[in-house]
Structures are given as structure tokens and as C-alpha cells.
Amino acid sequence: MHIAWLGKKSPFCGNVTYNRKITNALLERGYEVSFLHFAQEESHSENWPECPEVFLPFLYKSQAFTIPSPRSSKVLMRSLQELKPDLVHVSLTLSPLDFRLPEICQELNLPLIATFHSPFDSKLRTLKSSTQFLGYQLYAPFLAHYDGVIVFSRIQRDLLVRLGVPSEKLAVIPNGVEAEKYTPGHSHFKSQLQTQRLFVYQGRMATEKNVEALLRAWKHCSMGEDSKLVLVGNGPLSPSLRSADDEQQGIIWLGAIADEMRRVEILRAADAFILPSLVEGLSLSLLEAMSCGVACLATDAGADGEVLEDGAGVVLSTQRVTAQLKALLPLFRDHPELTTSLGQKGRQRVLERYTLSRNITQIEKLYTEVMNRKQIQLSV
Image 1 (spheres, rainbow, N blue to C red):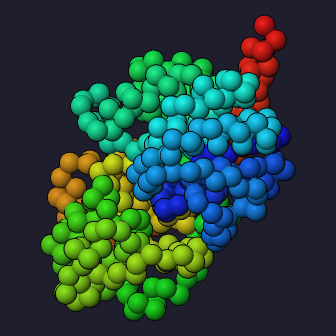
Image 2 (image 1 turned 90 degrees about the vertical axis):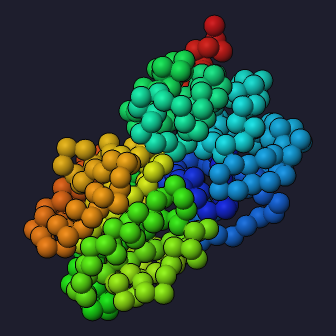
Image 3 (image 1 turned 135 degrees about the vertical axis):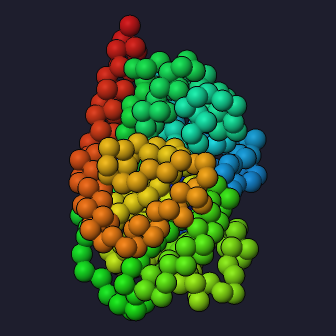
């Protein structure tokens, strides 16, 4: 089967990681994949799949959204006519082209599947007004015309159904982690830091990640010389979040780390992983930490609370995050048996629900269902 994959390759964000991991996995299972994305020229990035690329013209793109050029629709349609794929799968890039895709694919008689992983906060659960809810309201009428829509959680599925997307078109297929790579194991990283207890945050340094709440709680608790907090990642808030006394407080800034196995080594050494986000989709960093057997604390932003439910980790409210962490950080510092137990439960949860292999099998099943439905429609 030939898949035309429309996604994102830059700038780096969770959508980019999703595109890379899924297209690589599809190629490994024998699919033919053509990668269509907004770019000016061919780019070479680490661990990206070797497959044909199509460059779509754009006026502007960022981590949050993309503005295509006026001729992008024509370029896309011409490319699909030439490629002749069996199916189009788009990892939605939050661009106006997202709304034109059902019309384009219908004209070409191509089945169309979307992955809709727009981040959200807990307000969506009660349908209160929020920027994220408005985004869901905007997309729902168009998603109803896609042949299949992948979402990461039951919350997203239920909300989109309430907004008019037919339930039979929605498939809950969460992010998946390579559980054979992200495993518990020996690491020298903790001894390199000369510490007894290691706490880790891994992600972007941006407003929605709420790293400031974690830093305030850490400094308030005076965790002692035998505990360290390591922060992995970069972002617009990095300069303002750092302070001169961080090292004395046991706070270590490592910045972005491109080497995946180095990130695995850090997670294997960690006693706890903390994700204080206000807005999320489904955090791959959280799943990677759980897969490495690390005790995890995360807010119920997006689907993260669903991942940790029923004892697979500690779920925090998105309200008063600092206050909650002030109570929990000393507890996790002083009780190794607690972090060990939670780490084991987190690893088991990943093996049960969130492996990349399971994810790809579910996507393959959706491809088959959508192709069959499309064939029936065309034969009527």
C-alpha cells in the first residue's frame, strides 16, 4: 500500500516526532510512503525515513501553525495525481490547507485520514470557553468530512462526537513509544552528577509547559545536596527561567539533547519524572519516562491524566501546581520504595497500552477499514 503522508518536518515539536516515528514504522512494515510537507528544499535530519519528499510552498510556519502560499493547494493536488497513492494520511499542521483536504481528496477519489493531536487543557472536559475549545469547534465540521480521524484519548473522541463528528469515523490511537529501546537499565548518569536522588523534566521551555511552577516548588522545598533536578530541553523561556543560584539549589540545565540514547541514559538514572504542563496533547516524553521505569508525576492536561490513571503515576491538577509539588517532592525524595513501585507500574502501563508496535497495528487496521468503506461508497 502506498501512503501519501502530509505532515511536518520542522520546526521541531511533538507533531514532528510523531511524523518521524510513524512513517519510519510504516516503512519497516513494508508500506511505500511519500512525505509531503511545507518546505523550500530537501532537508536532512537525524533518523528521518528515506522516502520521496514533496515540498509545499508556504508563507510562514512555526511550531504552532503554518500559513501556506496561495498555490499550495494546486501543488498538493498535482502531486497526489502524480504519486497515485492508495490513501492520504495527514498529521494536521494547523493550517488553512487542513480545511481544503477533504475537497481535494474527494475530487481525486482518495481515502483521507487525519491525526488530530491539538493540545488541550482540563477546561475541555466541561466545555468551558478556552482557546483550545474554540480550536475544536473550528475543526469539527471539517473533520466530519474526513474518512477517518485519529485522536489520542477518550476525552478528545467524546468532545468531537458532541461537536458533530460521526463516532464511526473516530479512532482512539494514542502515541506509542519504542518499548524495546526505552527500557529500564543501568546508567552512569546519576553517579556522574554525584547525587542520590534524581528528578527530571524533559520538554520545551515554553509557557504552556509551566516549568516555572516546578522551579518554584523545588527551591521552596530545599531538597538538599543529595537531590538534583535536571532539565532537558530548550525554548523561548530558557533565558528567563534560569537564575544565578540554580547550581547551588541542585538545578542543572542541560539544554536540548539530540542524541536519543543519551536521553535514554538520563531517564534510566532518574527516580522521578515531572511534567507540570497546563496544556498538552499526549506527551511522548511522559511515555518514554514511564517506559524506562521512572516514577511519573504529571498534570491532567490533555490525555496525560488518562495515561497515569488508576495508579500508574501521580496525577496533578492543572490548578495550583506549585502547591502540589511542594508536598510531593519531599515525599518522592524520602521514599525510594514509592518511586520504585510507581516506576514498575508505569512501565507495565506502557507495555499494555502505549507501545509503538501496538500503535502501528491499530493504524493499519484503520487503513483497512477506511479503504473498504471507500470502495463500498465508490461502487454504490
